[in-house]
Length: 183
Image 1 (cartoon, helix red, strand yellow):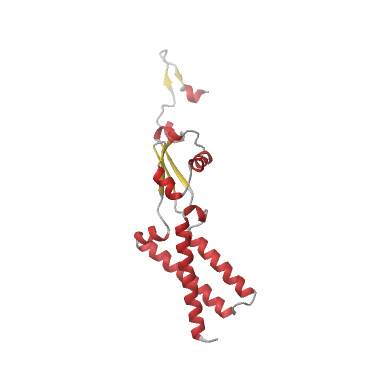
Image 2: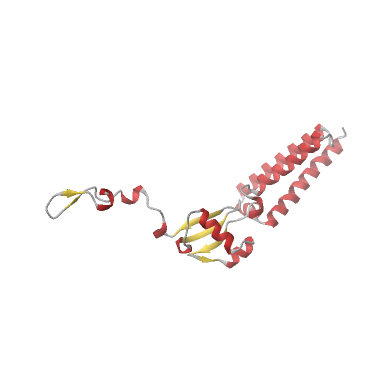
């Protein structure tokens, strides 16, 4: 096989990687589901290369060059995002605020092309019945909605009652359990 043809295969794989990554970033976070844009891109490209190799449309050597190029591109973009958080925002995206103190943030919803019913569905899936319980809600770079509750709406934890006295004295001097613990 001609080395120039192998180099062209590697360049085509790198170009396709860059193009598909750009398209995935432009279509929004929710288009990638629970994958990062990188993960989805690598899965799509590797699937296509393997398909071409299996059906003999490209040689094993060309397919191998494409697979190695995709792996190198994935590593390079991952390291670039790790070292420079500005690149991370470009390559992976940033969380988008969609709810603040129980109020929809229209700019965030518009940016994510998400309607109120979809945001409310995400709240229901998190067990939130009333929007006033939400301090902040974000669409994360992987498309998931993360929710931070208002302090008063957070579920009680074992540590919340750790300082509660185990026994209280009644006026008669008899020790009793607090009503919440006694029952």
